[in-house]
Image 1 (cartoon, protein in one colour):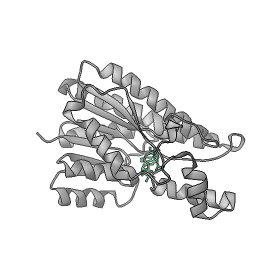
Image 2 (tube, rainbow, N blue to C red):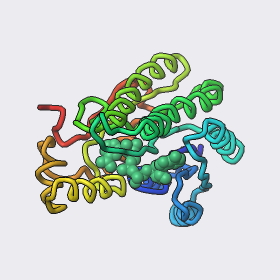
Image 3 (cartoon, rainbow, N blue to C red):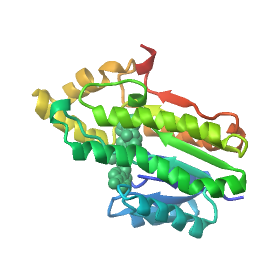
Image 4 (cartoon, helix red, strand yellow):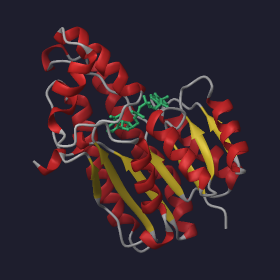
Length: 256
Ligand code: NAD
């Protein structure tokens, strides 16, 4: 039986690596993201792994576009077995200068979109008596850092949402779990390295070692493949007893 995964923000970074990993295991994949080459990415992965893919550029700022993304995926593939709420943005600023519109965008994309997408797939997953929802939270869903008020709030909120969906899905074989990575070198983080290098007057290498990886015991970026391996494990049929949990993949950050 061919399974289908809908992965938001899968035309870049962590989401892309997860999408390829799922395709390599025979899943059909609905790609999604704002990258302009999204359709081409989806086509190449379909060719490489001999699976079906499609692509949507639904803007997660708009609830009706998220609902349409889910409907289009169900129309194309009939089921959504795994939903991975991965898309996210970051904005870093001291509280007194933090723009309200950035706060609203981060809450909308990093938290509310996961609620809307999960709600939209719920009836179908319940009917199928199978569903795996995986929320890509962050170590910042468990710990705070200065200047990230919106991101830390959204990622903590996502862990709360994960627990509630874990409870509500019990009995319908719908699980919901969160993955909480430390720093992964993706476009989202490359932007932060450049910004912080300018702000602190340090080289990019100094920012990585002295600022970013300071809180990780393992002083290396987390490999994206480790996140996709964990996602595949959580999506498996026999992971049905694992729900409402958060998994750190943070190089020892939260052990301290
Ligand atoms: P990325 O910037 O490489 O990818 C983000 C994806 O989200 C892109 O495909 C982008 O198009 C999509 N996206 C952003 N805004 C959107 C919108 N309004 N509508 C639709 N799509 C939108 O980032 P990444 O580093 O791969 O991050 C993926 C997830 O992992 C995020 O939720 C992020 O918070 C989380 N995370 C990242 C790190 C890290 O160090 N990179 C660490 C922990 C958690």
